[in-house]
Amino acid sequence: MASASMQVSFGKLISFANRREKCMLWTGWLFACISGIILPAFLQIIGDVFDSFSPGTPPEETRDIIRRQFGIMMGLCAVIMITATLQSSCLAAASSKIAARIKTRYLEAILRQESAWFDLINYTELSSRLARESQSMQRAIGEKFGQIIFSLSMGASGVTLGFTKGWSLALAIMAIGPFFMIGGAVFGNAIRKRVMTSMRAYG
Image 1 (cartoon, helix red, strand yellow):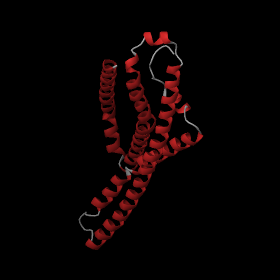
Image 2: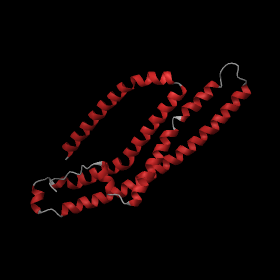
Image 3: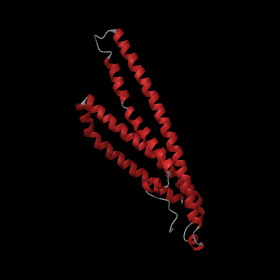
Image 4: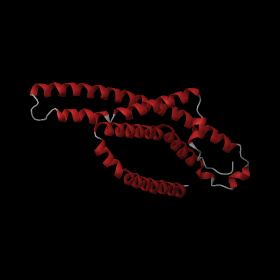
């Protein structure tokens, strides 16, 4: 062990999980995907509600449509509430156990080093770095990756729904999509560099 860095790949982090924790992670990611797929359906329901106010529609029919759509929205809200709760609980429980195991093994590796190894590093920062980086790993395994799956599934579901209901408008919006992606990438890269700079300064 030549340095005190704990930076490892995502696949390496998952390798620290046992069978039960991997099952919890996959379950949490599945519920994140389900939540992302269901969420764009609200736009379709709201669109049907707006269409019910078109001229010439009898008030009784409008009321029936709104009641029916309201019932569907309440059902979707209940499903999303359940899936989001299970997603958060599964990912939080699994990631906390994995992070604790990583922290234990990292500490054991430090204690196995020879005394000369501590002359090459700032040993006073080991405890703070151990706590900080293990927390970052825990968030990456659970919260962050769950958010990525949720966002990707929501985007795919929204694009599919958009091309199904109005391909011309969806195509026009997709044309300016790369500009938003480039802007988001530049902003994310700037934030990442700022975080790495602050971590090095803190260390």
